[in-house]
Length: 397
Image (cartoon, rainbow, N blue to C red):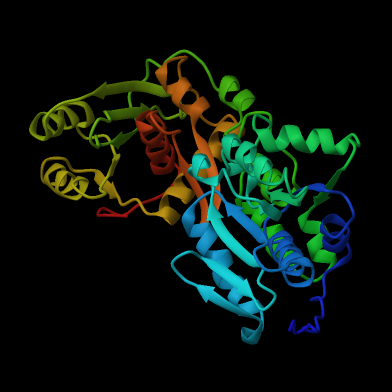
């Protein structure tokens, strides 16, 4: 005997732009949206509805995020949002099995090969611009037999990625595709974000980063926080004036120790890059820096190096890196470059600046070189710029 179950469901209140972007009849939907605009909540609601209202025993529904930590975060949010009598959870597999037998799996896209082989009835790709293109290829194959729907969401991050290209195809009206753009101003109007918060973000973030994260306007340079045109506008001859401030980034593993000095007009006048033992490194910094004010990386082993340097040099400061302090440092450098406060020669430093990237995370903006590349010169320049535009007291920042 088959027992029929009746499920009573009331959709959470979504604002107009959320609803129109996500709940429409198109099979493929791609949403370029501001951070904190409700795209995740809207798509969680959509996927839960697909599984709960349209699923049956053995039907699979996927949520795919770029990395495991983001996947787990959504899994926890779904558990909080759904009445406990409607599902049972598997914590190790990050899955929710509903009373109708349908299963939502929360998966990571960092290993695309692991995504092949399943039949999926509906899927959400979260933070699509940060997901590998191979993950999209794999997910698309899982929808073939079921002819399942998909929602592709995320912040914009430059123009050189697969999600941006798909969005442009959807935007011009390709059959079965729907495109939507949700900005921070839509969320303000809906009462999701405060106007003061967005104004503060606009004041404190570089223009291109604010436009990508809050206005869904992609930059031309793939998420570079400085802007390629702005970097090139700062290129000039190396100054022959005396150093006024030094910034030193100490070597880590296969990295280089790099020191950059600015003159009184914030023009690069010295650049020293080398790999040496710690004893030789300390002697070289002492010789180069002398009595010039210097801000030096004091993170990890750098703490002991700075302590020894402070015993030998009168005007050395230490800078400890954390997620927040690095963000502050890089945002000051971005302001200096975009406003052309600083100049530097056309050299390896320019290559590092051009390849440098930012990534938005739930704890802030993370800045780093791409995998396999270095950012020693960028850090050294940022330390020098930061030092000459602040008034420190002797010690560790």
